[in-house]
Length: 419
Image (cartoon, rainbow, N blue to C red):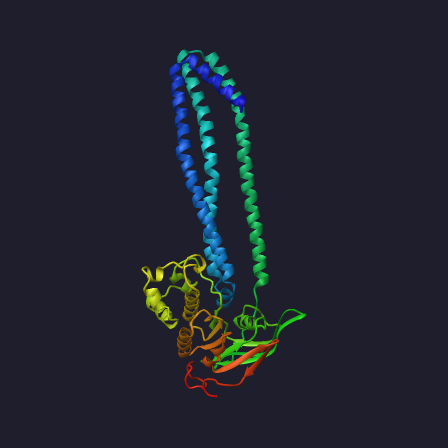
């Protein structure tokens, strides 16, 4: 660094001695280049860095959305929706990275090369004007000796190019690994349809995470169209695992499940919400729907008044993972999302736990009146009053309980119970 400063100082002093006007032009030009780097390039660099950080945060949010929506995504088979969101955002991040990496190099290159070339031009002009061509030749030789100092800069550029090539290869390696994982993780669940008038049939179904840990054994369950079944049991008895089997999230270890895989909607207890608008959270990868369709579905979940009261209506943002919504509002958004799927079978895993009993009763009545078969997992004491049949999971075994229940094919209501 000190050697460079001394050489530049000697060269400028010699130029001033030879031609003060030329030295003034060189100084003004160098000052202009520095000012451009200082105020223009640096400002653009800061803006690009800020934009990159925003793009990275958005990419992280999209990845979190995909991971948190795993069960619903597997149930609905809308992986392509999440993959496309992430792909588009990753491309934006890549563009921002290129910009951030290029701008710091652009300024020094322009300043170094511009100053040297300008110095050479002025020296040539001065010497040609004075007519001393012999001296000009010696100065050109001197210039080429000085230009050797550009070699480290060229080496640095080559290093950056090599790093970019290496990063590209890393990305290709990761992509290859992901493709291989995608091949092995694709579950080929048998497509067996239930008998006419039935929404789902489970025959001698068993499930275990490992051979020595049995979660469910010999489960037999049939659900008719329009029937509501209430399932309860202590924590850890396999209620969520049972729903995962029906939804196709997990394959059964033994037995057969007869169900139309495209006619299931799954609402977990913890509703994953995209950091987006209410509209996009309801669509969740579906093609565009009219406002009337969305509001009708919201009405069934008793959330239409809340959405209508928002200044932006369906375009209202829900915040990061629905941070701006209460637990009950989140669950009703999840229920609306399921209703829009037009499924024959609704799987509700504590999906009304954050609703008061009045809202829960009216929402379940609306769902039952639509003719959907509903499997409701709940811990609430009076929830069995909403169902046509009541089951209990105990030590991996499904047990049907007797007591008060609704007449078959009647809408879910606390009136007209048979005991």
